[in-house]
Image (cartoon, rainbow, N blue to C red; front, side, top):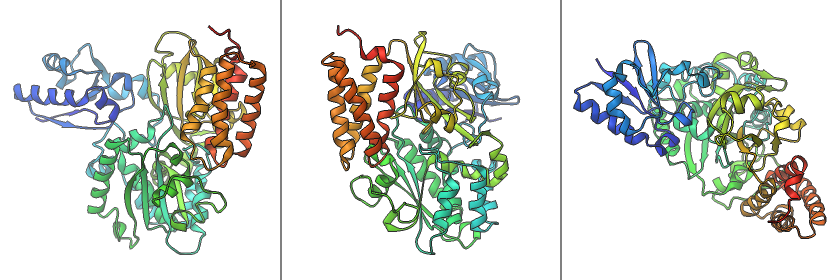
Length: 513
């Protein structure tokens, strides 16, 4: 009898030795004349347990981790192919508390299936959303997405259905669907995990989007730093073409949708939608003046959907199970689920998909286990390098778009980076200005010049040179950048700076050592 062993091909697991573990398991099985099948799955998102090896047994999948190549002989000797006890045995995978309490809709197959096997995807409910979408009129598909309450998971949280309807309402012409997979925010990795662990989910979501608005071509704009995602996407796209899920006649519907991956060149600014479109057209990544909106005049001057990976990957479950099913998750105007990414000084880093409404404290302690250093958590930055710093006194804030906006923060792409009480918040504020100065496309003065002047001012503040006057200038500069910048890069740089000034003023007035 063949035993199936799952070993992740996810980039994080690979960096921790997953390939060596896979080779060791294959070699040990040959030596013992044992019949095994190794499946390279995605990661379950519990990175402190990677490489996480799972074995398919009569009682379900049993997990062992973190496994090193040197552990493999001992695992075989203990009988791990039968799910036997061992110091690395974690029990049934689905019963691991970190995983069991999640509400996985977008990540439902990540870590479960072979990412590039179309048969595996179909066996686990894949393409049910597309099949239903093909029975509906385009306007009905758009209405379903609208009624679900899905909002953009990339930062601005704009209602996805409204964006799609704008594209649908444009006169019949060439239209495009673009996926912004240039995941550049620090502490974010959900896009990468999904593309590496379940690429068909994204492909299906983009195909549904194309059929909904009459777009016949799609592009995934992928950051060049994601080679494993690039390979997985291309393998999955080829399989989808071969089976008729992409191409001139999608599932015999007479509707066309073609899809390809384009690589970016490492510019953070291309995470902004119009800069991404400029790059896709072969030009320097630089922000466009709006209006017109991309939904009216986007890629190559044509109506274009621009959504990020998680937004588009949320669409198949909405079409499969209905808008109300998805809308039943969440709170207020924040509906559905969001993959939250835990990073920084945290004991249990990884991805947590939950409905909106989980508090920051629950995320940091119930899932994250507190700081990796064992010291008190002092602050977290939510929403990437341009997100606000949130102090411990606000950790009971629900992770919800409006609740975070109410405290001057934003959820963005769902990245959460933790800091313990040794962090110097004045230097973190300086870093925000420095980051903006390095990554600015240079098109508008508030961002290009303001960030450079901001670094200089912060250096003076830290060195206690005319400190109070320079702190006042920092505040004035932040207001200028906030209201005068052309896009979110310059416009959001004040968030980390102002929040650090507000919540951690003592760090800006320390005695110079």
